[in-house]
Length: 134
Image (tube, rainbow, N blue to C red; front, side):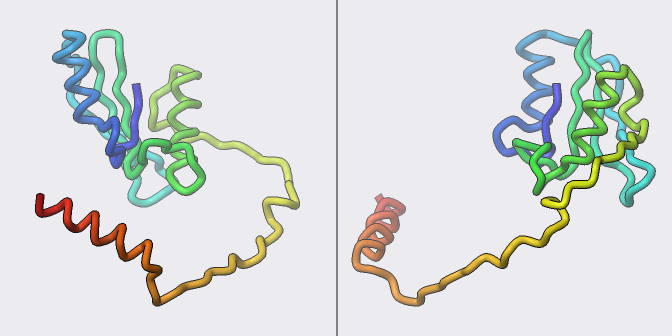
């Protein structure tokens, strides 16, 4: 079982409580850090062993830690070591084939801003604020 430690939906504490209280599994080891010796800081997550289940977290990962904007490298390391039945701290190396579409810079995004609110937006904001005081 794994999750990102910044996951607001399924976090490490809730998962550990689920394993212990709901499933009745006993914790067999203290929480330890798994690392990536190539990066600093080297601690990239936590590992705790329960009866037949390993709970792994990815430091700084959210609900989708494999997403490009989150922790894809750390997620890949975790899965690779799980599949190979290796220590989660075992570094992984891989060689990706050259892909020109990945190295071509994207066109800059056009961002428009406005300083005035429409009447509909103002009424929605007023309604939301009024709910705070009900």
